[in-house]
Length: 388
Image (cartoon, rainbow, N blue to C red; front, side, top):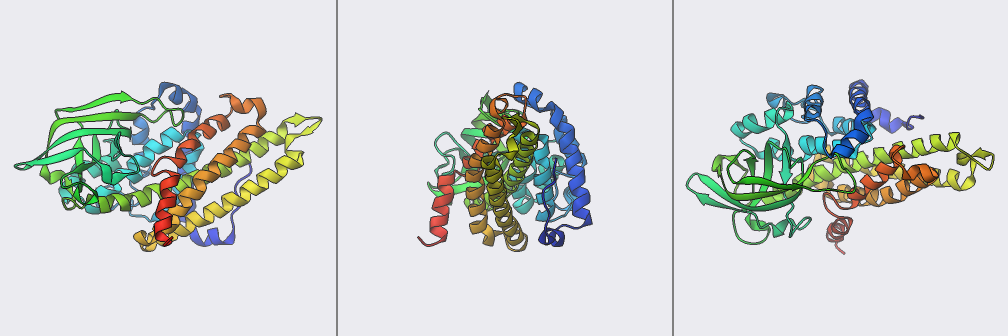
C-alpha cells in the first residue's frame, strides 16, 4: 500500500525519535489486526491488550516519569493516534485512548500524589483499566445537566445515580467520575476517582452498538456508594472547568485518529480499484473515481493541517486551542461520512461484506459526529467563540 505523502513541514515536526516511536506503534497495531473481526463478534477484546500497550509506553505518553509515563509532548501522541488506526478496529483504539487520553489526564493534572500513586500509575502500567464517567441518560453533551450526586458524610462521599455510554465500563477498575456536589448548573459539579470494587456499584448491561463493537460500553449504577473524600480531584464544585479542558484533549486525539483512518481507507480503496476490473479496465481508471479520490485526499490533507495546527497550539497553551480543536472535530467528523461512503461504494458488493475492513470503518466512523460532543454542539461552541 502506498504510504501517505510527507511534506517538508512534517520533516520539521517529526524527528528520528518520532519515527522510531511511530514504528513501534505501527508494529503493535498491525499485530492486533488479525483478531479484529473475532473481537468485534465477541463485543470485547482481551484485557492483556492494555498491558501490551502499556509495556510499549503507549498509556502514559505525556505523563511524568514519576508515574511511569514518558514525559513527551503532543506530537508523540499524534504518532500514537495515527498509527493505531492500523488495528482496523476502532473499538480497540477507542478503549485504549480512553485509558491514555480521556480518563487519566485529569488525574495527572489535578490529582494528589497519593491518588496518582493509587490509580494513575497502575493505569499507565496497564494493571488497572480506567473509564470516564460523565454522560448520563438525561445528558450527554450537556455536562451541566449531570444528576449523579455525591453528598458529604464525614470524611466520605455517598454517591447515587447512573451513568450511560461508559467505554471500558464493564471491566473498569476505576472511573474518573463527574458528580453533583453543589447546586444545579455547571457550578455544582465535582470530579473524583471512583474504584469499582465499592459496595453499591453495579453494571447494568453492556450496550450493543452498531459500530466500535469490540469496546465494551456500559450502563452503570451507584447506590449509596461510599468513597473517601481524598479521592476528590481538584476543588469541590470546580469540576466543570476541568471537564471542558479534558474534552479538548479527547476531541483532538479523536480528530487526529479519524484523519489518519480516512487516508488509510482512501489508499486501500485505490489499491482495491487497481486490482478490480469492470468493463475490461480497473475501477480506479474511471474518471469518476479518480476525481473523487483526489478530492477526498485534498480534504483529508486540509483536515490534517487543521489538526496539526491545533496540536501545535495545544503544546504551547492548551486552552487557547479550543477554536481549532472544535473546528477540527466538526470538519473531520463530517468528512468521514463522505469519504468512507465513497470508499465503501468503490468496493461494490464486497464493501457490504465483512471480508474487507471498509464496511466496518464506515459503520465505526458514524460515532465521530456523536462521541465527545455532537457535531451540533461543536457548531454551537463555535458560534459563541466567533461571537455570532
